[in-house]
Length: 138
Image (tube, rainbow, N blue to C red; front, side, top):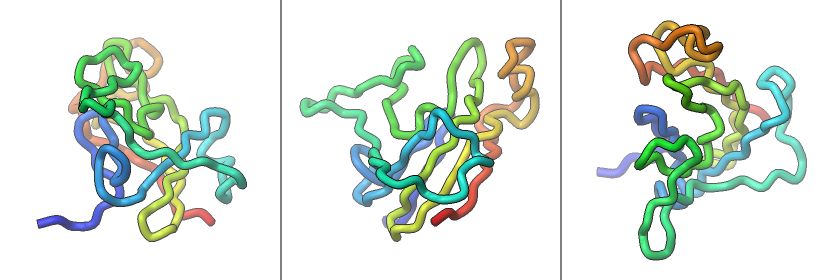
């Protein structure tokens, strides 16, 4: 059974249905110099990237987190790791398979304690309980 999907969340890995991850064409752009609230439309001239974490001989391409087996996915700029999963507040524009656009930011990875994790004064509690903020944009 195969259902259509655009994004999947598994632990700290957010995958899109495109490229190495799936058979669709979902891609994204990370807007490193923007804030979620500053995005009210899709900027002109963006190049959407797809998950691409295998070499031609099927060797995994790791992301920059330093965690073994963490694949390089298009949405990886949402987090860093320094003893806990810290959110970066980097917003993303995701082009869905149906051609619509979504702006999205990961606000929390933990059920509680995200602020303490982010500022280095503690760690989060109950991991992989995401808080995502998103809306459609044109």
